[in-house]
Amino acid sequence: MTEPLRVVVADDQALVRTGFRMILTADGMDVVAEAANGTEAIAAVRRTRPDVVLMDIRMPELDGLEAARRILAGGGDTRVVILTTFDLDHYVYAALSAGASGFLLKDVSPEHLVAAVRMVRDGDALLAPSITRRLVERFVGRDGDTTAIHRDLAALTPRELEVLRLLAQGLSNAELAARLHLSEATVKTHVARILAKLQLRDRVQAVIVAYETGLVSPSDRSTQE
Image: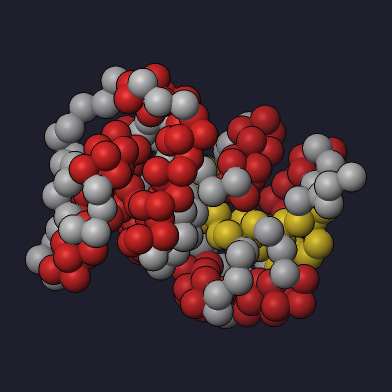
C-alpha cells in the first residue's frame, strides 16, 4: 500500500487552513502540519519533510515568498505551491523563479485543489498556458542576463528543444505524444532529460527557461488556448 501524500498548509487565516485540511484529508492525503507564517512553515517542513507545501504569499513575520526560497534552497524533494488571491500577483513570478512548482488561486475548487497537489507531486506543470504567457509577458526579460541559460540550451538535442518548445506552450504529455507521434513514455523520458540537463526542478521551471531564453515568446499561440 502506497504512503499517503504528505502536505503542509501555510496560511495566516485559520479558516483557510481548516478548509484545505478538510478537502485534502477527505481525499486520503495527510496534512502533517499547519503554519500561520513563513517562519512556522520553514520549521514545519524541516520537521515533517512533506511532499508538497501550500504556501500563502502574504503572511506575518516572514512572507511566503521568502519562506519558499529558504525551503527550496535547502534541497530535498519538497515542492511548493504558492497560494494567491490574484492571478497576476507580482510576487508569483518571483516565487516560480525561486523554484516554486506553480500557483493556485485561493478560490480554487476542491476538485482542482486535490488534482493540483497530486500533479505537482508528480512533477507536472501547474500553470495554464494563458496564465503562463501573461506572467512571462509581464515579468520576463527585464534586462536580465540569460547568457548562462543560453549556453545550457546548447546541451539539448533538436528533439529535446522541440519538446521544450511545445511544453512551454502548455501541452500535456499526452498532447506532446500526439503532436510528435511518440509514446507518452518516450515523451516523459525527453522531459526528464531536459530537466536533468538544465538542472531544473520541474516543468514549470522549464517553461520559464523557455521564455527567458527566447525559445518561446509570449506572442506564441498554443492550440490549448
